[in-house]
Image (cartoon, rainbow, N blue to C red; front, side, top):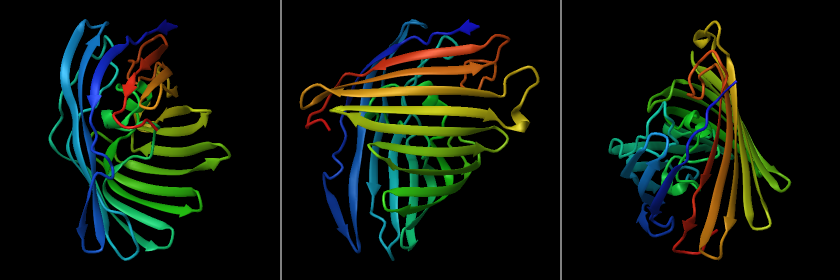
Length: 300
């Protein structure tokens, strides 16, 4: 079995988000909420002996609340390039992406409990989020990098008490392949959970399971992925599936500091689904990420 160790890319960053309730603008029937953030960072990769300074994420989010009889919206303007773990096969890449509308959708509530979104949607799949300043860890992991992010489509979500179910269809775009997804989420005792099935046409399907909760003041979470190639993507002599799991812990360090840690294991086999490269021998990887964090307001 071929072992591949992903080197730790150490990043120092300052994230300065606009507070979610920093201000609102009164318009007929709606309040527009302003939020967002900016990330600046220095990266060094010990595998490739490369370093870089970058401002990968700079975003302003404008949103209104979905209400009966009113069309709501959520739109993100700016740039999102994200920060990802690098390997010797995929050299470190940083820097700003294309400036423009990164995501945006309109929402309506046709009946009580049912919300319909249409536009460039943010995926429900995965524990982490795309903007660096909104994620506990400055670098996103291998599991996240193989999940969808933003894509053009429509989603219907039905909520009942604390549980919700959804179904969606997407036309792809933004690096995502067209496909469908269904899922459910809700509390299970002290643990919050979500199960999602995402299917990319002629590419792959992902079963994604998330569990999160707290033990004392420590936040804990796990994200398990199982990927299977679509028939059109299968290759004779290579594996048809792969799996990965990411474990998260975030420990408070006083009122304003925290210490998020992530440990991850990915088994690609010879499938190439996680990007470790299809080969005669099996490919596996482990990653470790630690992101000491200081908040200018009290940590939550």
